[in-house]
Image (cartoon, rainbow, N blue to C red; front, side, top):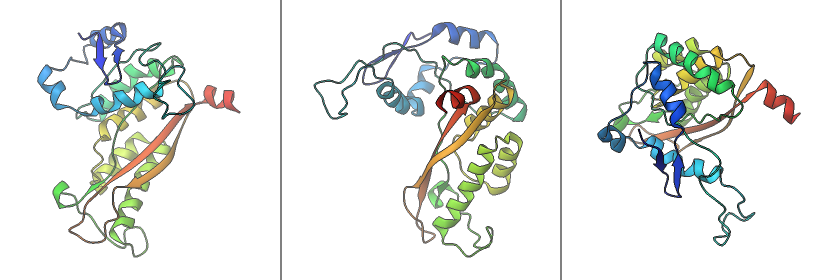
Length: 228
C-alpha cells in the first residue's frame, strides 16, 4: 500500500488507516501498477487539490517568491469507481456515508458531462425534444442541464433513468451515482448546487465535437448554518 501520492507540487500523504478500513469491508481492492499508470483522472486532480490546500500562500497566486507550503496538514484517500450497478451504488453509498458526515473530511468527485461527436460515438440531436427548435450545442446544453437538475434534486434512481433514456456520455456517471447514494445514506441534510457550466466548443454541424464541463458544490445543513 502506497503511503504517499506524487502530486507534482509535492507528495501527498495517504490516509492508510482509512484505506485499510475500506479494504476491510471486502468491497474495495487495490489497483495494480498497470491500471494505476493507465488511469489519469486522479493524477490530474492531485495538483489542484494540493494547490487548493496550500497553507499560508501569497495573496498573489503569481508570486513565485511566496508559494506557501504544499501537502501539509491533510491526507488523501483516492478511490476509482468502476461500473457499478444500482445495488452496488447503494452499498458504496452506505459505506462512504459516515466519512461524508465527518466534517473533517472533504469529498472531491470528478466527471465531465456530454462528449458529443462521432469520435465519441454520441451524436443525439432532436430539435423538438426540449420543446423548441435548437442548434446542436443548445440541445447538448439542455440535455446536460436536465441531468444537472436531477443531480441537484439528489434523485439517484432518476439519474440512472435519465442516463438510460438520453444515453448522455457522462464519463463519471458512476462516481456521481455513488455520491447521490452517499448523500441519501448520510444523516445530515445536504444541498447540491451547480455553480458553472461550459462546453469546449459550440457544435453547429454533425462533423463538430465538444465536451461539456460542469461544477457543483455540496454543502451540509451544518455548513449552511455556519455561513448564514
